[in-house]
Length: 429
Image (tube, rainbow, N blue to C red):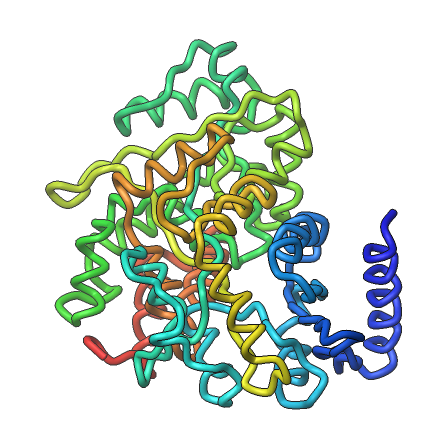
């Protein structure tokens, strides 16, 4: 173990103790200047599981930037927003904070905590859906650099498919026939964890995005041409309810982690989730042959609808306006927009990089990225309906959960979603 790593672990232990004593207020640990002009930059994140990978990545950066040490400090994801807000308001916050995206970025921007990056970092040629995640809604300025793209994915167990004589379905009839055959064999066809309602809008995208029209509906609903009471949207929500028979028993009592276990243990054949789940599933069962597929359009889908992979940006890195080393912090964030950093995100963190032109050694990441590039659509409840409260994902998540419990139908869920977002959403704004 290196001295640097030991120091980092000790700092983390000290930080953890301080957090416990101060009810989630961050301990001291901002940027510092050492002997001979050497400087330490702190990077905060909610990705505890990626600590080793980020330390490896920042080791590479340090080798090409003499005198700079990067101290990566991850916090528990559910506590991070509060910790970050407190840190950015004081003098002991990070130089480079990992910040949320889209609507969840806006409070950080409004507080004046981030340095605008327009003219300082070149993000030309980046995917517009991804780039939108890093901008202030009011002024349109870029405040951060996206680090990863995520995509909705239907994972499937290749061995179970082969054992049951199934091929990747290309039509809805083939998809339903596969579900019926798997269920008859005593295998759960679709592992859904509906106890965690936050995942249900993702499940809805995986199973039914073609039914509401994917990218075409996104354009119509954001401009005000349509809303969430549209018959195609309602029908798409109903698709999820109709597939309950192929989900785990008592699905609303099944957590996402339980659903992952069902899939990785071979008790379920498919798992609808995000590309962020890939590393977890591979780690849980390294011998498992995992494939990915796009669910074909359900009957009644709008003309021209096709199977799609919905995508979004999953967090960004910015420069704190209170950093004592803004020039060095900006240099680090600029590096985060390069292909060198993006390639390491793909190789070490096993995420789809936000940087264009990255190549993927992992065949599944390569396939998912390719599917998004070819058939991509925005995960619209996240990319466009998280800028106010109640958010679209919150409303649909709870609504689908209640539909699976038999308390509401698809029309009611859709109407409540529409009513909720219209309290703050303005078409075309």
